[in-house]
Length: 173
Length: 307
Image 1 (cartoon, rainbow over the protein chains, first blue to last red):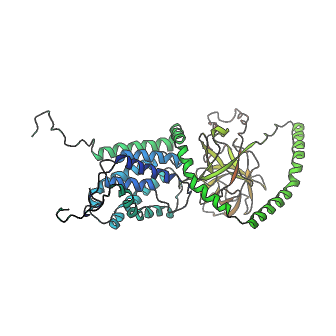
Image 2 (tube, rainbow over the protein chains, first blue to last red):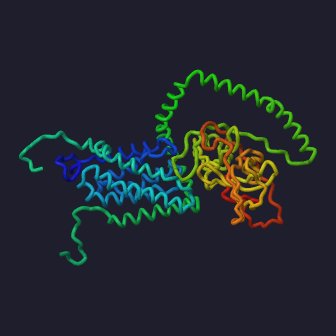
Image 3 (tube, one colour):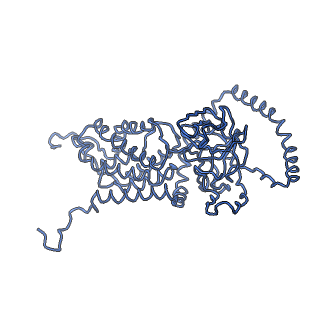
């Protein structure tokens, strides 16, 4: 396992409790009441997309569904809105994971940006069909913030898997 | 090559195919969406999850609270003094009204007794603090710090010092969600204070409200104050709600487009008063269609008001 497929570093295997912990912390970050301030990223979506890209066999649609339900309750939104969006996000991210890891981090961010935007569009469609008001274009800013955060979040979440770099000229990779 | 009836053992057990799982979870989510949007049947699940999540939620307010406390700590003394002075002045200004209110209420009671009318319900209320605006960008809700434990029930009206803010939409054990007047789903029966014209005021988004279903020649002017008419059995009559800011009488439409701005600080945060539940209205007379459903208490008045 490498940070990206073209990287020369080999990672330690991921620990399951660390994945659970990061998803839980993301949920906590989402609970902070910022109100209608635009540009606050959806932390759960970001971390979920990250793990779906890096560990598609461990984190998937079931995790997305459970987290989505939790978000629906604490967010005072309609039940199933976040669940639907996160399930689709997890599916798309897992499908993208074979491809996206070949790119450097900046281009990875460009790959996941449409995923986040699509997730928001799904939520928008679900609510507008239910007769809610349009939240304004600024609401989509949070997807761009999340994409910008892809680079730092990758390093942050992979820290426990990095091992000290030992240079060995005889090793093939 | 596999023998008939015996599939080769799989190398890796991965469960159902991704598309199957996607279809399963998507249909589950859609079912939830429809059940909640259409039938409002998932409140018990919401209550359960919210109760479990409450300690976590409380913990996440700590940084926000700390920032707020730090801001207050740095408030300058002069501004505090000025605020104090203003408050004292305001209190003195309303003292006249307050002193006479007791007298007026007594007099009103006697007069009503003389006229053989039902006594007006006394107003009781519970002060609540607005904690924060709900994160959902599609609706306008705020969370207050009183819940089932404090006797709050869904459907109660919430006012601030100027007028109506909204209505309690959901209650949890320690907090409650207030649906603001400016939400698109919220409607409130009002009357024009100047001439008693009754109408329904509904949220229009973007912090504004609109007066619906009034004929193009209805007697409404810019600047008119709208107060609750009390016909719905939820809001007490006479509470100030909004002021008319724009009247658009286009003859192409049969209704006038009347835009109103809320009087109370609907989108500002601070303290609010949750008014007690109103006692039930007298039963409707029999000559009205008996099939008209009585909105049960706690159900929010949604785009329909009983005439």
